[in-house]
Length: 413
Image (cartoon, rainbow, N blue to C red; front, side, top):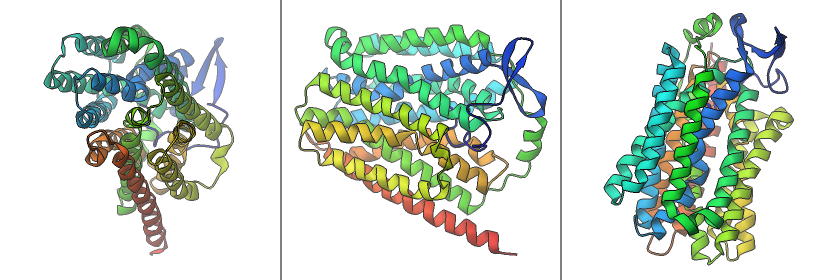
């Protein structure tokens, strides 16, 4: 995906990346003198967008499967957990394997297999088949996401490219999150939504052929030898996992709580689309000017703000409150990632810890729906949001304790 936590370190480098003109082609200068054309960067982002598309529309698609009686409300959280956890595993494996050569062929093959798994929804008429096909789809989504991780991680400005990627990949998610409940699902059902994902995967297969071989610059190879996995660094990663577990737990029940509030489907689609668009606003705002804020303070206070918004969704008693809280939820979603990346690199400059950011983030997103499902009862999903808010509070505490531990260790002789 991106490694939201690995890419935002060199925050004062340039507006989006260090750009030069070489033989008439715009390129980004990478460590060790390596240059990447923006064609490669753009292709990797397109593939990454296809990989992460499910994250923005998962509540709508799984909600549709629930409405059709193919899964229960409790299974909704479990199915979401299976796919995103598989995505996390796949991203770790993909980022490793795609550095070994033949990246274009590997990504193209992975994208074709992903298209097949999305199309398999037409044959998945039992919960067991749904869990198997969506688990396989998650592994493949993570695998091809490795292309974006490899390209962005090895750039000079991983923070700005990451912010750009986070913002751009959210735009098609927002468009589809609005269109699905308003015009697509009522006509063709959940199967049609997964068919669209299959088509997007086919586009990624074509884009994969613009990718070129990548190898870590010598400077990065040398730096990784000095990686230090201190308890404080591990604590920060734990905080990242807890925060994203809260996000995943709340987001995957956002559509269901709207049903309980008897909110019209078109308003629900609009609210979810606005939430996704505000993710773009938040990511661009940080990349443009907000990165100057004190990253340690933002890392601690950010989850508290997110937890407050989640509580507003849980206690919503009208469509306007639901709409406003859901929109604010999106604003915070991506905006905190760059600050966490800066914190990790400040504590562990080799970037080894930050390289695990994508897997940690996706792991958190994957277990969130499962944890929140313990607060779900028949016709009542509000408990899921209470659990998510508690996870946000716990993440803030974990960040604060880890930072304090790091400061103490730095003062020791």
